[in-house]
Image (cartoon, rainbow, N blue to C red; front, side):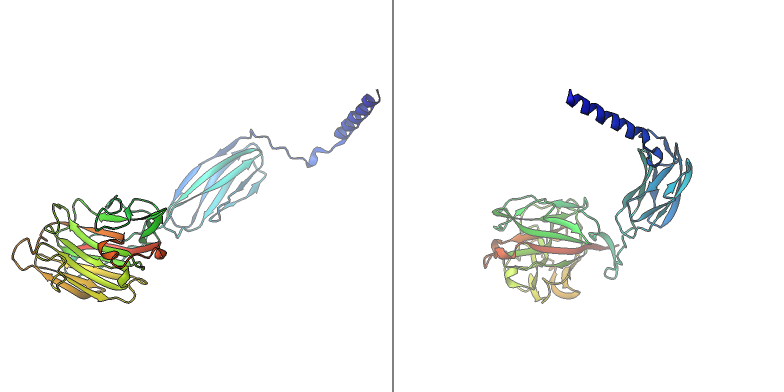
Amino acid sequence: MKTKMILSMFLTAALCLTGCSDDRDTTYAPDNQTVELSQTEFNLTPDAGTFTVNVTTDREFAAYTSDDWLSVTPANTVSHSETLTVTVQENADTEARTGYVTVLCGGTRKSVTVNQQGVEPDEPDIVGPEGYTLVWNDEFNGTELGGDWTYEIQGPGWVNNELQSYVKDEDVTVVSDGTLKINLMQDGDDVKSARLYAERNTGWQYGYIEARIKLPEGKGTWPAFWMMPVNYTSWPADGEIDIMEHVGYNANVIHSTIHCNKYNNTGTSIETASVSVPTATSDFHTYACEWTAEKMTFYVDGQELLTYANDGTGTDAWPFDAPFYVILNLAWGGDWGGQQGVDETCLPATMEVDYVRVFQKQ
């Protein structure tokens, strides 16, 4: 009986407090308020500017944005009808962006989506040799390789007794900040890298082919910028054009070489040449080949390294009257790269490519 009495007294006191409370400081926020927007999405250029949105609601509302490149006025209103002005800052980035302006009325929220384009990347001032016109290039200004490139997928030992696997992995082939990075890296007990072909099925016959590259360092690395025939049947009969090769155990020495039946790894000055480039692994340098029906001339930073002439004796010496495609790859070990062993402490190692360009006479 005593417990029931105490409970009754508590309920009576609670009812008295409720009846005496003042509701003037209490704001209720029902979630079924009407919010009408004149437009819910805007697609804008990269330029700074403003736009307006007409808002109609059942009661006062607030407008806000959490994106620092947007602002909205008025932020609060006691009116049921108002025109909001949204100010948009310039987008100086090449990436598009999306932000939101939210109108809150009671418990109801509605948003205006703001899509703003990025600026177009600056086109490089590309100038080829006199008499040549740019016919293909990749400046690696995006975030991934374009459809002009093909990946080779192969395991260790596929060619030249190389130790790496050629894969298509997003951490191996990276396009960012205006360059292509081919990363040679450990994958458990294995090593993986990439071998990439440009315009594999069409290639180019004759032209001026150039790339700007920073090479990896470390014993066992074997990067190359080279070309092989589109209609390949046998090697070396169909030819090979090695614009640039480098082996890590002979740091900062650049090699240019051709292969054919008449000249194939015989080491003569007719078919191969090398030059010391002291900053080849710490800075970018340009490697190029001018290829005509009469000869091929190889260049490092615009300086002639090797000229191989068509001697007119036929395809054994000159199988180079056919389309060839561009190859970029970074090997690990192998017949040449691994002649003095490999040093796994240099991994990961990166071959970084600023651009690849092909010019032809028109």
